[in-house]
Image 1 (cartoon, one colour):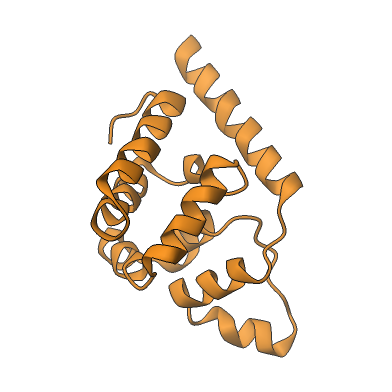
Image 2 (image 1 turned 90 degrees about the vertical axis):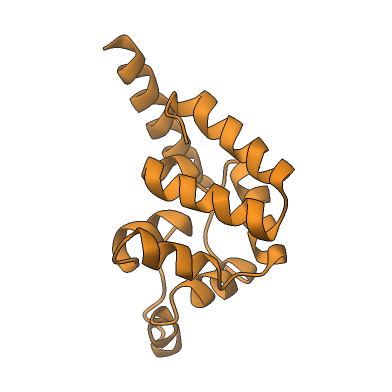
Length: 134
């Protein structure tokens, strides 16, 4: 029980830092549009996007299942994925805010499109932070 409370605390702390530190702009919105082309209409209409991270809303609100999430991630270039990795490492992108299954998919796409070393680094960070195996 104590381990679960520590994980919940860590996730909430990471989420609050992420929300406080980041407003999607430029490269973030470019990546979001690749992952979720349907948001482009919202952006054009001026209604804006209130997301503070990219992966959580894609996984929770747009991807219909794990296969769809993977297909969306595979639309990204290695450069886009590296940008997301950099944001995860600086804690402004919240990988800990998506399910373990979706995090595993993200790591697998990293291994395929960026490098196995980068994927392993993100996997180790996720496992260390959550205690869940990918």
